[in-house]
Length: 149
Image 1 (cartoon, one colour):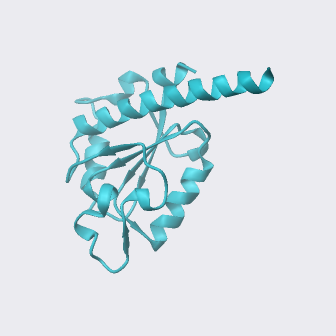
Image 2 (cartoon, one colour):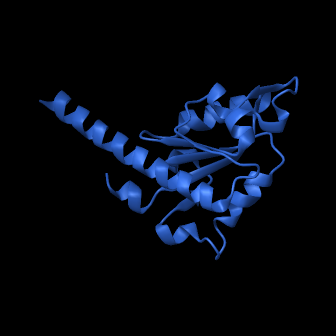
């Protein structure tokens, strides 16, 4: 499934945050960084996404949405937590309604630190997620061969 490396589709969800990381993520789509030149496509449909990019911390309302979007994504999939809030709850971590980072509700594969995370760091996180996707795709292919034998 090396096609994943050539044309990964990403899904972005902005959980509870200040939107600083969302702005930096959108900067990745501008001509300055232009992640689309690498074949990366931003989709609004989780059923088409390979990589789930999440910004912001988790509260009761966003927890349900994050879990639902993650469940709808086909395997193999990867999750990238972007920014301090997605990693640990950030400046909101002591708020009464904040659970913490994204890894409190779904498994996270790549952590991109920063407040706000830099576009270069976000792109590096996506590249790391691509390597994880490739490995998972190879593992699935091996498992299918074993089952078919």
